[in-house]
Image 1 (cartoon, one colour):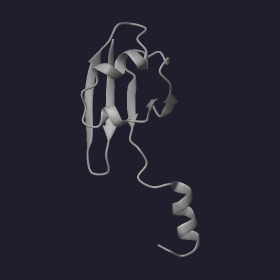
Image 2 (image 1 turned 120 degrees about the horizontal axis):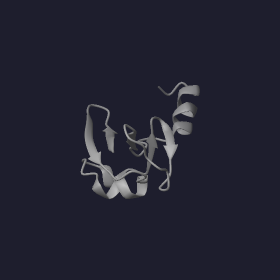
Image 3 (image 1 turned 90 degrees about the vertical axis):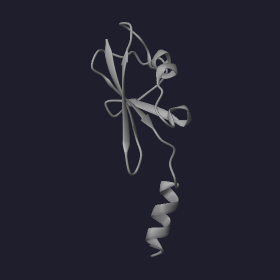
Image 4 (image 1 turned 30 degrees about the horizontal axis):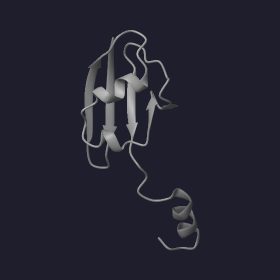
Length: 85
């Protein structure tokens, strides 16, 4: 089966296609990903839904590698509420 792996950055994105055995999990797919920054991805999603290591992938799935947050969303909201932006 073919699975699309995507890693998005603010100014660009990367795509890699993997050929995996039927019934492969996220845990089995991740070591085969060679995208820049993939090793630092703290989480991943399949078609926008948060996935864990045991999530089974299906043919045509899009595995999204989520990058670390640059700022705490709660802090950003507080700063905007105070008029700091």
